Amino acid sequence: MFEHKNSDILPTSRFISRVLKYFGYSILLVAFALLVGVLGYHFFANLDWIDSFYNASMILTGMGPAAEMITTQAKLFSSFYALFSGIAFLSMATVLVAPIAHRSLHTFHLDNYESK
Picture: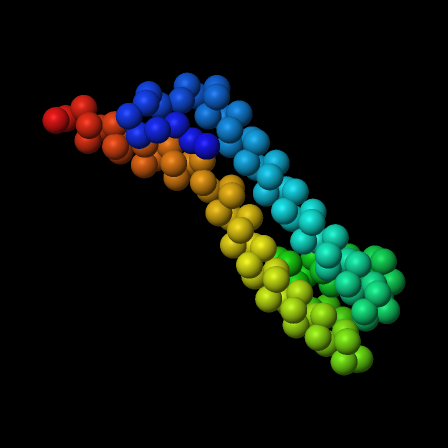
């Protein structure tokens, strides 16, 4: 997916394009995770749409639940959504940082390769 360690480093314009593409991927991951949460809180916890969005947003960002879950199904969904949100957050961060980390490592490798 990224250039090989022996190839030249990408020009800045293509690198910025790659970062923006991966930023778009992370936005899609956020949207998907938020959609799962909104639908789950609406149907399992019987919250209004805006309250479902609010609760899903709070859980997804790590702030904690905003509404108290009363039923067993709501508590189970909220628990699993919190676990899912932690994994989703780490995935989003990884997708966002991947091109930057690759460019840094590629640059270090080129410096090492040129000094031999």
